[in-house]
Length: 218
Ligand code: HEC
Image 1: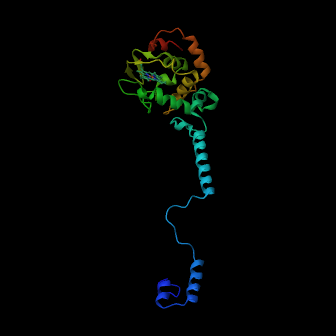
Image 2: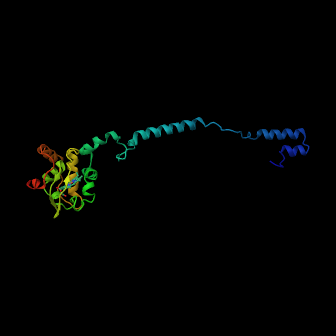
Image 3: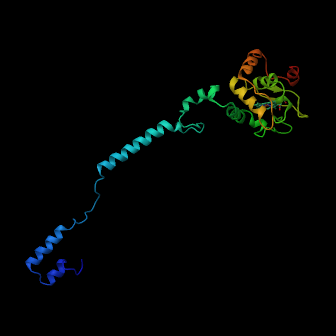
């Protein structure tokens, strides 16, 4: 406004008349109020919207985060339901279940490649044991195996622990089906019913099997 006709200072200096001053004031009063210091309050509507959004987000996370459990692959499944889900054979693709169980229970020794470790852990890839009768490998995972054994022409002599107590019939069937179809292996699937049947039949067997004991099974 400097130097303009409505600038009070320049009007004063110019010796403005009362009439002119009144006109100038009328113009000034029409102008917006001077900005004030401090904060103006947040509009209530915006505050309400933001609160509603935060509330919604909190409820959404509580409902769909799966408890931020790394094992939850479907965020709509609450963590508490995971165990039931894994136990229900219909709800789980056996191939996926088998791979998961293999990684968690077998890969430390037999390796994810299924190649084992020469001189220590025998290979499952291309193994005649894996391709052989399911009556034998079910017994191996149920009770373990120890004693001299030959796999793909190489001798091994360590002990494999029993996994029967820690894995259910469906889980053992899934992992055996997995090792029979992975790494180029191509042997028929193992059914949970078969595992159940053999588990009942060998219930009284003390300790791990000796390989020659299993080779007698046709
Ligand atoms: C602690 C190490 C270890 C773990 C874990 C383990 N194994 Fe074994 N496994 C062995 C050893 C050692 C042998 C050979 C035992 C012997 O020398 O008599 C063997 C032998 C076998 C055999 C017969 C030989 C062959 O290579 O085909 C199969 C089949 C087998 N294991 C499957 C499994 C499956 C399936 C799992 C997981 C559910 C598993 N093993 C977990 C160490 C292990």
